[in-house]
Length: 434
Ligand code: PLP
Image (cartoon, rainbow, N blue to C red; front, top):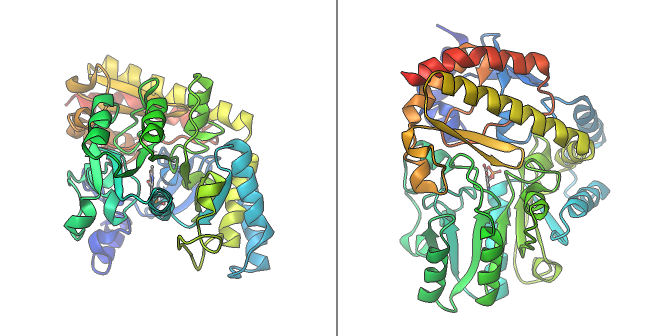
């Protein structure tokens, strides 16, 4: 028996499903999850001693590659000074200033530990600021696992084909109005039907938890305009896209396309912790100042702004310069082009979709004209992806174990790593063809 299998069997005896986050269990692609023991640059190594070129990147944070020397050095130095103080540190301000320098709409920033906390707090702030309760969310967008945000939420729920979660009280679920992404008429209709009652629209800056589904040109500006015309706020969730899809997140991609959108509140996560737990809620100063201790909205965290985690995030952002984003862009395009060419050669219908440097590939006849929303995303051929996934794994490449996720490259994917991906692709494409 493989060591991975042994560890999985043992884990299932004490951890539900053997994993601490559902998608890790390989549920939708089948097989035994790889238990990782180390990660370096573009590679991860499993418990059987096999290494893989990694296209998961810890689901986003490992922007510079795993165990980047500058990040490790910052973490070691911070750890030697103390693991946690439960008191403010200068580094928290430095990280907040770095975020604001890249995303001016983040006038004030509160650090938390997970993206879930960031969106949960953004919604509480929006409700406090507007005195209203209802929230608009888009089908297929994932904003973490707080009660009100699990309806048609993409990510693991899409992978497991779950409409939502058990254990959410109906009155709480009823506060969230779920509509189709990129559907202007649906947004207009819901504002008409619930006039004066909607606190906010929450949207992924670009959909990336049902595969990558960017907003149609002008759609995000439309959301901002209709929200404000109706006295509601716009919350942009950049937990996944932030500091990955561009130097200043998807806001930067929109800006470069001439679409100027200033969200009222923004959620960040993943990259700003560089692999340790840091996330943030940010936005307009007068709304952010509603947070305790200046305002009446309560939010707190024993480990918020943890010094070791903040050191990792700050080192990551400090090193993520223009050259890093050029590398990410080049690597992403090389990998996507090679995968698309291999799939075409094998006769597998597919489409590649982009959000800045972030991409994913949808499989199947139903997606070839593009995927604008969740209904189309869920029509994809997830079985073909499963076969492709396993053949890539066999070839030494670790892809996300779900058809509903982005492919994450890092700045450490060099020619050797890309070469291994390119070598593995033809067999994987043939496997996908069935
Ligand atoms: N928002 C988005 C867009 C995400 O992709 C995620 C996680 O994947 C979250 C929120 C939740 O973040 P976390 O897993 O840190 O709670």
